[in-house]
Image 1: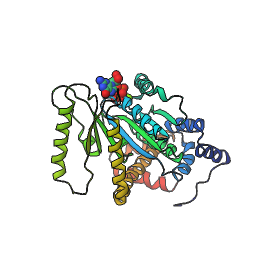
Image 2: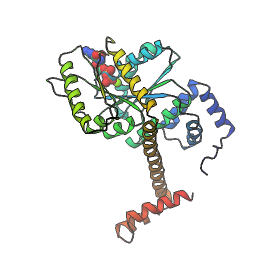
Image 3: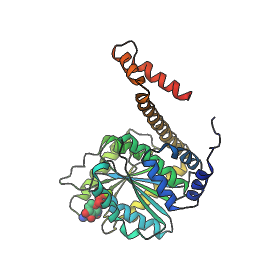
Image 4: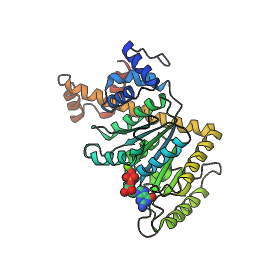
Length: 329
Ligand SMILES: Nc1nc2c(ncn2[C@@H]2O[C@H](COP(=O)(O)OP(=O)(O)O)[C@@H](O)[C@H]2O)c(=O)[nH]1
Ligand SMILES: [Mg+2]
């Protein structure tokens, strides 16, 4: 079973070929299917994963209003000047209520709307937050197979879910802004761990230098207890509105990419960790589907639940049974 070629119907094969050929309409349609969790899209995604491994993924996260979308717009501009094709995935965790946020993201990047070498898409799911991480992985699989040179992943850095989503990116940029006093904004502990570059944005407003200094000090202390070969996060000052500092930011991103290229074992480690999480994510989606399906099998779930409730069985046994039955399906 392992490593077998993906059997595709001829229409699915055509669809995959259109995407590999750069057809944006086919790409957009498949993204919508992935968002809605359409099972019939899985064979296409399987085939596309096997065609991937080309795009450089850059994660951009930080608090709402920090200037992520404005900064991403500048990065698009920077890469386009160098002739690179750029796709942007704006992940929207607050999906049912966020028409505004997504619209805001689009507006900030409007000047690229007519550039066929720029693709901007927001990802939202009506379902669970876990579904968002899964759908983001699907979208990255599609864009990577299309060989976009650069794929920028923008998320609002608020919760654990966004930390999970940022794990898709081997280069993670976290935005900070001077927010009154010299306090560094409460960066979620997890975000601190995954940041490779800190951009102190809105450097045109008072206090930015101070935030950058505080961050640098924190990072220096942290580095003392780390192996000397480990990547040292870089702090840059940016003004996303005017574009000042974008050159420094882009250079910091390239340094991180060069570091990974020089340490292929670390790059491999990062990819392995990310794939482990991805497999666990996909498996848990499957398991949830199986449990939901039991509900429709004339009381099968009810009977099982009763056995858990009256303690003639236990959740440990039930979860193992589910796993066993999923492998025999
Ligand atoms: N003063 C100043 N404002 C900025 C800067 N970058 C972004 N903004 C503004 O901050 C607001 C939020 O920007 P946006 O990119 O939507 O933030 P996001 O929510 O992090 O994506 C907008 O009004 C931007 O114009 C900057 O460098 N300086
Ligand atoms: Mg935004």
